[in-house]
Image (cartoon, rainbow, N blue to C red; front, side, top):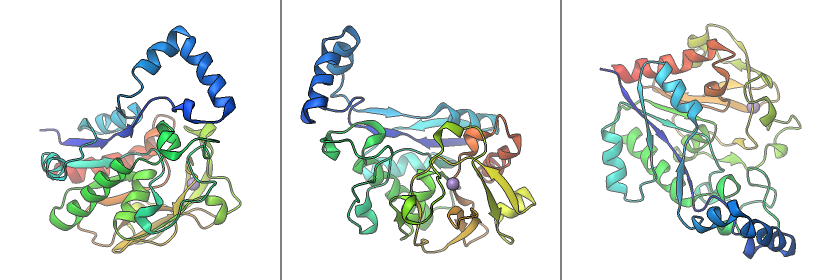
Length: 284
Ligand SMILES: [Mn+2]
């Protein structure tokens, strides 16, 4: 039987920013939108929260021989843990920034995936422009619960690698610019190469690719600062940014990757090795 792999969703309080709570420019833009045919429909539904997932994650898991299931936000801890217990593996997907409160820092002004929206409070922003406390809470609990009580394989991609690190007691650079001058937010190159990474000998990642240099894409404005407990670094960019991590215990599959193999895999089939290794671990 094919393994069942859960993929976490992005949870948005609303699809569109609540622009009426912004500044003068946002108010006039809001009026234009609200008076349009499409805008009327969008804003009528805007108070209903949504779960959103990337089809690239779904297809990467399916192509590797497993059945993907998109996991919704579940705020009840007991229900979320029981959901986890039905799965053979879990992919913590990319998305909006993890809240800084989880690693004991104040949020910097220049944080936020696309920068903070002018004149808009965090809770009134939408989509990727805001941190979603409910998602952070569910994912951190699931990671800690899974590590302590189960052997379920875990794969974290981008935000997923970052929240894995935070759940294990680590922290992030809120903005890569405080750690490097190289631009790791190359969204226009989502399925192409942005920079090289060095795979570190002795790690699962190095064994997987059987080489030390790998070209990857780069769609992150944050990165790992303090490494979480029981984690080891398995890939570094030339400017010293941590690009992948894994669990010290080599008997279990727990891997966090800062690049996006699910977006690269069509052009660069070698990247499918990550998903095959993950699904293989989930099949045992
Ligand atoms: Mn990068």
